[in-house]
Amino acid sequence: MKILLMEDDPVLGDIITDYLQEFYETDRAFDSKEAQEFIDEGGYDLFIFDINVPGRSGVELIEELRSFNDTTPAIIITAYEDTNHMKSSFDAGAHDYIKKPFDLEELKLRIEKSKLLFHIEQDKPEKLSDDVIYYPSRRIVKNDGMEYTLKPKEVEILEYFLAHPHRLVSQEELVQNIWEFDAMPSDATLRSYIRKLRELIGADKISTQRGAGYRYE
Image (cartoon, rainbow, N blue to C red; front, top):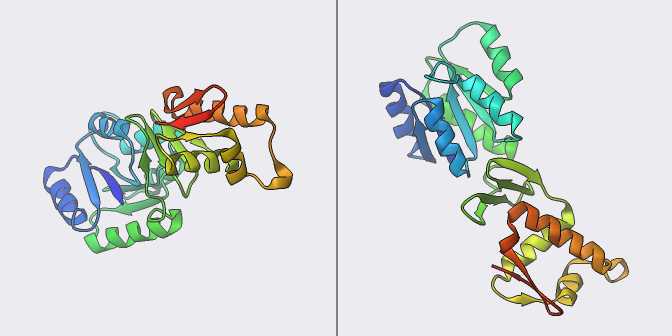
């Protein structure tokens, strides 16, 4: 499980980071600009954001990420006591909220609850290129920060290619291993699926060898 913590308090941030790194892969950002730089690299399973940090607040950052279809689960941590900040956090797209001071064990329990709620442990991301990450159990491709949910056949085609990299896969082989005999697709339908996958993961990832088939690189 990979976590991004955004906390500008140097002491508290170090304490939380040291604790989390005993159990999870954890990166720590001091402000929203640094957090965005980490996010642009992709592949986080959970965000833990403080509200009051330099630049955009944790709530504003979550709201912006949601506007770009980033559905990564997010926990807000804050010293604010009022319910207005709690409401704004949930409205922005956070799924949990913890008031400071809190026990580190409580934070871990909430993280573990998030893992169950969002099936995070079952969804080990696969990096397809520098900008593209595939999340198998959620059927999601994240490309340059944008997320797309694959259709069932798109998932099957992509996973067949991933299981047979750098090998020429004929159209007949692809169809026979993915479709039932009585539901064979037309050539145009198969080409449509391949075209969509190229749009999502990069045109250079799936090459066509005319009259022979496809090759995933």
